[in-house]
Amino acid sequence: MQILEKDVHRGGFGRIDKVMRSDGSVAAMKTFDPTPGRFPAAEIEKLRKRFCREVRIQRSLDSEVFLPVYEHDLNGDHPWFVMPWADKNYLDQIREDKKSGKISSTALADILNGLDALHLLGYVHRDLKPQNVLFHEGHWKLSDFGLTLPPEGSTTKLTSVDSAWGTQEYAAPEQRKNFGTVTAAADIYAFGCLLHDIAGKPGRLPFQRQTCPGPLAPVIEKCTETSPGKRFKSIAGLRSVLLGILAQPLNLQPSLEMEGWTKELAGAADWDVQKLEEFARFVGDQGESTDGRVITMWPIFHSFNEDLCKAFCLLDYDLWLSVGIVYCDWVGRGGFDFAYCDVLAVRMEAIFDGARTIDLKAAALIALARMASGHNRWFAMRRLMGLCGPLLDDQVAARVAIEIQAEEIEVDFRRCANVISKSVQDFHPRIADILIEKVIEVGAKSSAI
Image (cartoon, rainbow, N blue to C red; front, side, top):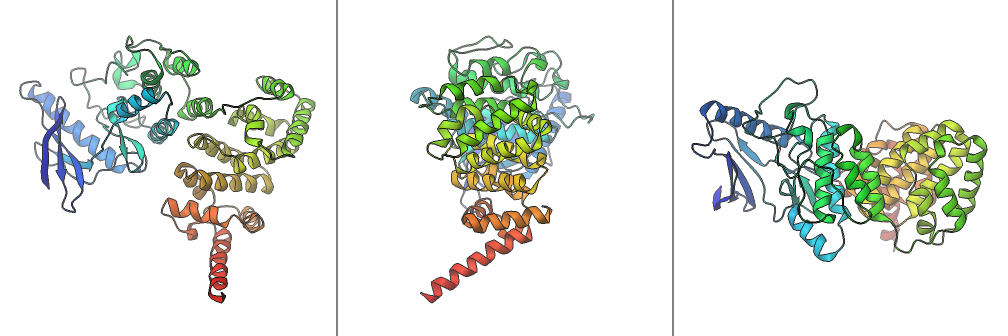
């Protein structure tokens, strides 16, 4: 490797050099190199172990949401690793958002997807800040895992009070009190501070509940509650609320009846079967017309979440089935904000998992494929591939295969596989056979011409 620029950035115990790899690509080389005289010998060894731990964690994570590690050497007193050279970090995006007056929901969705993936593995980042979110291959990805907590139950402890406990401007109140035991709620607090950077007034007191003018105020306030138990319970819940706000159509003019049902949905947990029947009839009537359906049905369907779908399913499955089919069709045929597709992908997955009948399971999968392909969202594509793999129920797969032919949406399924570097053979055999058959059929027609 050739060093192009030395000491591009230096922290307390490491430096980053800009280098050129043997293949000619430009990359960033991070080397453990403590500032002389800053740390005692015992602390330096602890920091070296933490640095090596960061590398091992980062290289094992999904490179689609986390910055990959190209190569590394963890032996010796100055271990190092090489990762992609990022032309910008999230501070640049914040400046762009403020200048344009438009918030990039896609960037926020990428950050949330990274946090969600990290939390699902049982890890907590503990140092989420704009400088640790880097732009690579068209996506914003998390980096710098030196303060990442191990999965629950692990006894690994490499961080001391003297070495670091995060960045004050983004750290949750509990981090300065008991840094070693913080939960995923600390990352949610830090994310709220990122939102405050975009929508809030300049400057903020650390460790406080933050707010801002405008529609993001409730989200920022919920994220930055000083008590961890009062924050969003998960990234999924936060994602649903935030991206729903950012995706709301500007020309929304719901009818009085639509507004009435939207308000009624707030108390849906207390509905009886008769109420659900009235609602199902209303949704069915609206579903008869496709003109402007995304905007028309937005107030109702935007209010849906996983808990509401589950409640309707338990109250009366047949009524929920009629609503769920219309909802899936709305998702599959609608034009949405790209980032909001991530919310809908999670919802389609939940509907699929909770469905008791083949028709609703198939409807959820068809909607997911259409939406993922139409909006080019790899997050949704990966979920489709996961649900439609070889383990998919044979009868559901057969129904999906029939719908693929009937609706002529082979291209959507093929595109979902291709974009995330999968093969149509990774689908359930019944689905794969249809996709391959159509390719052969198209090829035969072309040859005949």
